Image (cartoon, rainbow, N blue to C red):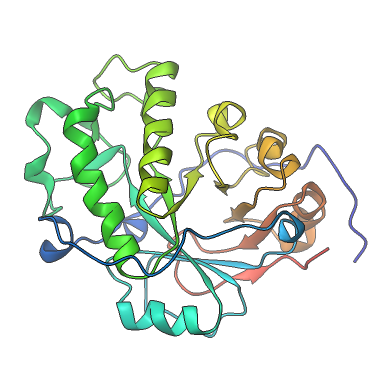
Length: 280
């Protein structure tokens, strides 16, 4: 297939794609208390020469399929066992854990560590509330423990989800700069714990945050006409892991692979099923 660089793509009307199947499942021993876990290695490196040649998998629900033909796996750090991460790492797979940093669910075993004053309006996930990201002194130790779980299970990178509260109705007067500071602090925290930091969505801030993060994860930039806003990462030879939930790879791959993204088609439940775009 001939790849052509295009800056525009046909899009479809906006719809919500996050579902209960995407929710990060937490368990009490994992997040409710601090556990000292030995690092399994250095943060994941992303060689510039490989930037346009990654194949990736994003799975947060269903039984993990370790046979998927991908060299990068974005996974739930709680549902994924240390044995599974060891199996994937033995095959030289790069592992990213997804952590929700800007919201908390009432069912999370560490929810009590977030004072009521830091919990705001209903979040985008079921039974979740947005957090006041200005309260860094309160949030940092809780999030550090979540990052430590990732590191201890063998993940080398962390993808920050719900890192865009400033653009939502959180119940707090958060602004663009509040979110920038929070996200940069999280990137620094991740590095201090031997994790490579990545950002999930938060498209309006990608240009400002490109120097601070090692990779970006994006949902539906083609449908939403946002792909050009991810170019600060691609132009810096940093991976852009992109997914579309509708449409055919025959339609959107020409655009996204031309931009230099690692693109796949998936169901919004983020189970094992995937259709990857071909490499350039």
